[in-house]
Amino acid sequence: MSNLVLEAAYFAARKHRDQKRKGVDASPYINHPLEVASLLARVGGVDDQETLAAALLHDTLEDTETTVAELVELFGKGVSGMVEEVTDDKKLPKEERKEEQLKRASTLSPGAALVKLGDKISNVRDVTEHPPEDWNAERRLNYVDWASGVVDNLPVGTNAALEEHFEKIAAEARRVIA
Ligand code: ZN
Figure 1 (cartoon, rainbow, N blue to C red):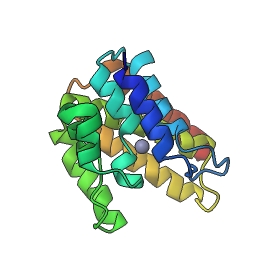
Figure 2 (tube, rainbow, N blue to C red; figure 1 turned 90 degrees about the vertical axis):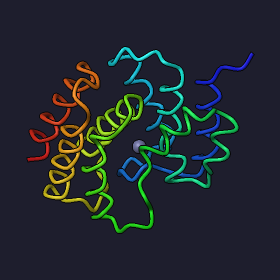
Figure 3 (cartoon, rainbow, N blue to C red; figure 1 turned 30 degrees about the vertical axis):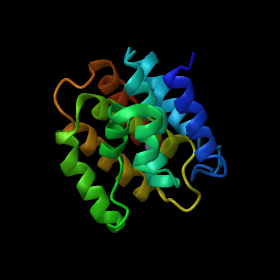
């Protein structure tokens, strides 16, 4: 019997196998989607299998050769749809993509909003603990402010425990980086 969440973890691990995170510790990329899914389950109490699978797959469209058709075939339309919702349009320049995320946050479905929230927790923690080598304090703090903006724009009532956790991580980031 196959298990959706495990299959998603295995698929994401293969897709991201040659990638490292941008931080100085250059950890294997897969640690990040694993952390996002783990945060959703552990902190947010999320047990919906499709949402957890989407958390594991959330960067495959944006950062690997994965196609929507592949995700639909292997994981279904629900999972694929959530991943599409949290995928940036790579044709846009970086600053516009950041603007788009701020604008689109309020329109996310409940599952995609959870994934986005977990993603921002993981990223802000990375920027605090393992920032990319060439990011100065200002750039790191700008990132935290932007991530807070995205989280603030998520639909009301997305997940109180995860929102509280984000606030703690963001406050810690500002304290450590400043
Ligand atoms: Zn991510």
